[in-house]
Amino acid sequence: MEELNKNIKINEADPIHAHTKASEVYVEAEFDYPEEKWDGWLPIEYRRTGVSIDYKDKPALFSYMNKVYDLMNPNHLEKWNKDQDDFWSGKNAQVTQDIFDSLRDGEWKCVNCELPSNPNFARRIQDLKEFGYTISTNTKMYCPNCGKNTTHLMLLHIPRVELAGNGYETWSPALRKRIIRVLGGIDVYENVQSRNVLPDHKFSEIRWDDDTKSENPDEMSDEEIRSKFQLLTNQRNQQKREVCRTCFQTGKRGTIFGIDYFYKGGPDWDESIPKKGKDAEKGCEGCPWYDIQEWRNRLNAKTENDE
Image (tube, rainbow, N blue to C red; front, top):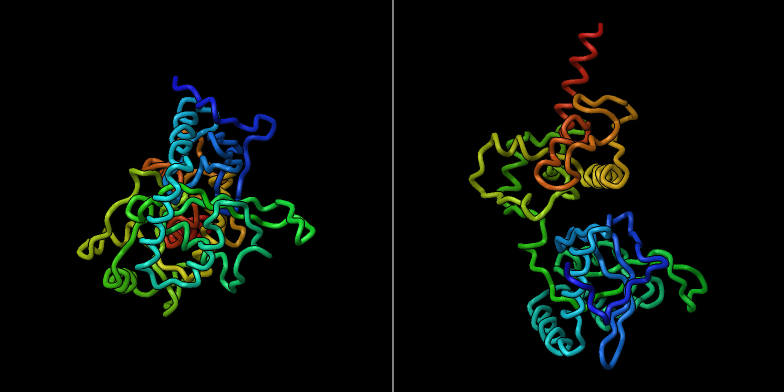
């Protein structure tokens, strides 16, 4: 088993911290370098960059922490800064860049008093994560300036993970329009046509791993579209994300309108099914949020049969 670098110390008293809303988990650690120390939270569950490590799996944990220790060596900081300058020079995203610049030194920053004010701050942080940056979040850190516990963010000096490798799927504007057309523009939650619908992956991204992501070519068949996507408004899409996040964290499957009906399985996640990866999709089947139209059809059929 690979040994943990002797210059890395894990806070054994309280090592694990979670940002439940983002389904992120961190290990609190200290990196001791010859001329300085880094003390912060290192993500071990961070789906945007494909990190998913069980704290109990010491070989995987130590290997990962040793790698990050090397990546964050202050000797690499000059190159890291140059890479970021090159990256942002080609971006037309000044508002997001201003937030990045405030986080750039790698220190904990209070979102209330140390970062630029923005009416859609959460979206800007999400943009940074989608650009491939690793950002740790402490939702209850004392801020002496605010005089209370506030959310603090820390940007880690780790090379960005390119979008193509972060586990998310993308589609062209042409395919987006086609998905909406093939699915009839039907808001599957309300079961009515709507101009405000967006394609939604039936299989929640929170359960994806590196092997789950697939291509979405413009020429994908109508059958593939119907199998993979449904249409929801942005509001319902966000609601579904919260339901899937809760299921992932607690094993409690979601409901719609409080109707306790699942056409496959029951209210609890089947523990015999993996939590992540392609096989995890089997555990989603039967949940009303996974395929709302199929759930509606099955419930209507059950009601008719019971009558």
